[in-house]
Image (cartoon, rainbow, N blue to C red):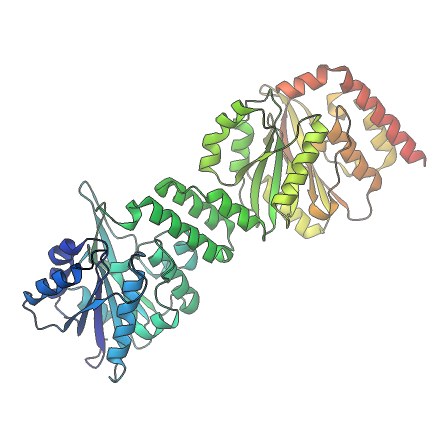
Length: 532
């Protein structure tokens, strides 16, 4: 329970030509409080230097017993009111220094309002060890209204504020002053996302256990007014840039980062989500999925959808699409997907054979993500067999410690499964491998190696052999012939890919003379290697 010896301070900061809203909405709601503040600070943060005198003149007309003080903003000007808030915080600290009390700060934006019982409800909710009280915040628009999103203390997590706004902003904040000062107050380098940043730092320092949440509305936020930060695109963009740069290291759960970036794009058209993700990938282990596009491939929606469905991994999965600079039509088709999903990355690679394209994409991925965990392959005309493929691979490699993993696939024509290629451990036996390769030279679908399902950890990556066809089979054979204990993990029960026989590139390859010739060469190569 709030003690009479404790002091409550309300701070109102004007910012950017909203004085009329201050006197029409915010200030009257303070004057109507059933538990009035002990000190009311109004900080002038207007662009017009004459505004201070105008506010002072209007305050002289206010009839109230409150101790009302008008301050100049002596700190950063115009950055979403952060300098004005901090001016008031430090003034309040000096004002209450000699008083034997605990100072509490109630914040109110100049275009919002408190219900008459706001301060009373906040004060009564204070417990001996409380650090913050958050009342419900209703959102009002000319065309709609929205109830408070803040329902209970469980929503007060760092991740929720890294993602977005779970229902705390400015006007429903009520802090004990010493803790607010201890985390540095508001960050004056931010032009937006200032409330989110404050809550991230506060919760990171103190947690939510000593916070109270009022399960009802005590404050009203008016949405859609002119000259707010959210409707100022440059301020919002610059604020988000600083926010992500400052807190990127806190996104230990990559799903929170993806959701946060997708929200920023959706609500504010944030243009730098890819740069943020690229910076994240410079320091974090990621799972790469490599998809080089050929010029004739335009039907890749099924493959990309199967990637976007992947879940349950501990590391961030990123689909890297390798494309030759000349393929402008494909870029146009991909443009919308790239905007909506920052974990789909387009990389320019050199043209040439399929093997050279795969190697160029692999090099580009390593440059993009130096702390890469490993690379999976997904061709544009194929699809992952289930939404848990990457999570299963990650779990198997964690358990076995292997450097690479081979899974299985189905070969389909239309809706018909015409063959399956299992990652049987027998592939590691020379006699069995040679027999499979011999049958491949005869064009038997069931004899094909499950080479498109090879996942390789970074330390075990090697380039694809530069052959005109079957470069994936050649690469797998190299791993099978050179494997040492625990290099390669066989998981026959794990279906990695549904492999389409109807894709344009696949159909062309199977009808080419190089299709059989390369397989014959591979068979002879394996024979020679095993003889030595």
